[in-house]
Length: 348
Image 1 (spheres, rainbow, N blue to C red):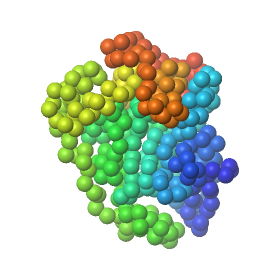
Image 2: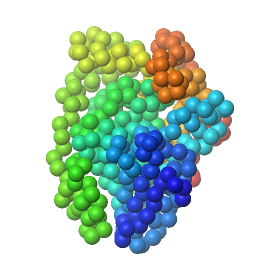
Image 3: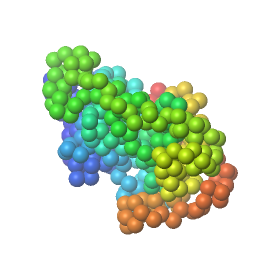
Image 4: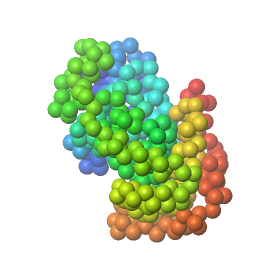
């Protein structure tokens, strides 16, 4: 194991701690492999009854993948990023079918890759500090780590709104949209986690869970469902602008800041994911999309603008929705040059 993932067994509890607090526990390739190794080792170990995932520090579980690495590697051809994504997506799928209770504590910031290692677990806990998001369109990417499946299964068009705009979810929103199962005040987490060795998971969680907080998105369903039901990004934007709702106008302004190409690819990915029969199928689609995105101008440019130079002024190419060729969008869903993910073949 590396020094960025802490793995230990406390009685019948296997504990995994993402330990890069200065980087908000952002995932490196080595961390993905270390988490996978721990899960593989414990799957057949009868002394481990439950697995718990937490993040070091006070700020969050995990802010996502190490996007600076994506930026630097993409400029060199993207082979390292594709290898990272292949192993990350395999880990996401394993978590979804792990044979033992997998308790993910989504305390604080839980975004991108952090959603991938938590929201597919069997017991997903949010606190009053939780901020959950799939913010990929902000940096010229498309929601991944199984996010397309989660978003496609959210009530109404909430997932379409979240996926395109990259908006954050409150704890209540995360529960409403199917990204979490239980709300537990952060002050009660130590007692909850300590109790998992002595009693069944469901019993312990029920002891500390409280009623779900309000979900702001629930109050905005009317305009979200009406606007995002459109079949094109252009029509979605037009409906948002014409709705007369201040929040809708703000959403339209946010979409105007995103990569036009990635908005169109995201909408197509979310619509396709609605017909998928499994997380594996969505991850296989995401791998195709992400491999193409790694080679696209907008990924490097988006990360440059948001993280490297921080000028917040990305120069997308194409620069407008009207200039995005539908054939270019369709190409994101073609098999990548290095081959498909083939989760069903790899993991059974």
